[in-house]
Image (cartoon, rainbow, N blue to C red; front, side, top):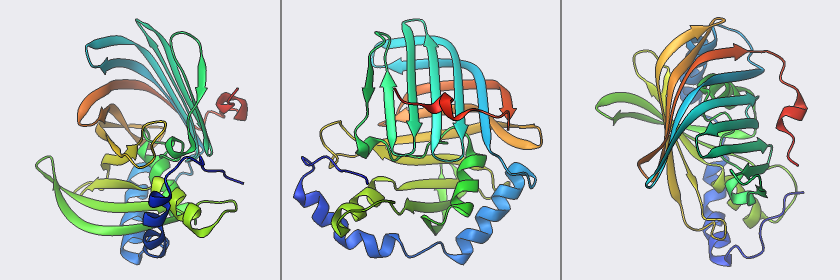
Length: 261
């Protein structure tokens, strides 16, 4: 059973009530058709179980700028492990279902609150993300039409995930709302170009802090199209600039790789 922090304001639960009915209406036929074409362009018909990216990262947090090797692993669309061996020390984040943790350069591991553990685990690997949207029935996806994105046309999709477990209707609706994200596909290639979702302060699920991921430099590895350049923005400021020329597809990552201590 999933438990929401009891300090989450009742007002936020009330906001979620009106959200639930529309959110879980199911995936539209137009969304399914376009996403299926996108997955075909990404995977060439393969089923992707896991991925491991290795490369270099530039990390920027205010005046702190660090560089170093990066390893990003994902299994399915609910598990990831991101290790940044930065000049100021190693930073590790793990997501395993609705559990997530963060370990800083001091070696101390902290569990993230549930409202920050529901974002897309495969945020750095679009093929797994699109595959999950098509294969996981807990997702509801809406096609929002063609929009201008950074000067180019993009198909816009809104997704939300129905939470599993037990709880009252308001809490379940809130958990779904916290899982919401937007995906953008290039109208020509149907390759994902951007992903957007929100994170929140540890003690305030009401406050949205926007995160966006930009994908570029696609190349093919083992028949799978992979963005070799990934940029992660926090509140529209660059946080991570990742170049990942080494890609391993379906290498057999073990469940223990995503274990949270």
